[in-house]
Length: 99
Image (cartoon, rainbow, N blue to C red; front, side):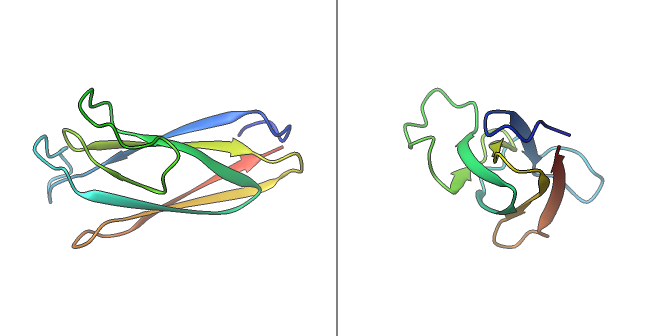
């Protein structure tokens, strides 16, 4: 849960996993983020010091199998749905409630 005050943030880590559930450290898949509901996508990142893409994009290449989406609540309570997709991989969705 995050506060529905238009300022609170939630940091969501995306992991590229193999069939056994292990992070694939060489994965650099392009991950696309789609958000709906009572929040906004504020930024994306991957931790790579050589990635100079804007933080304000809706997609990000994974670095060492990881990517990050930063969500911000709106001023009204509700559910925030974040879906991550990448070509050739199963999509994943997380729902965060803002109160």
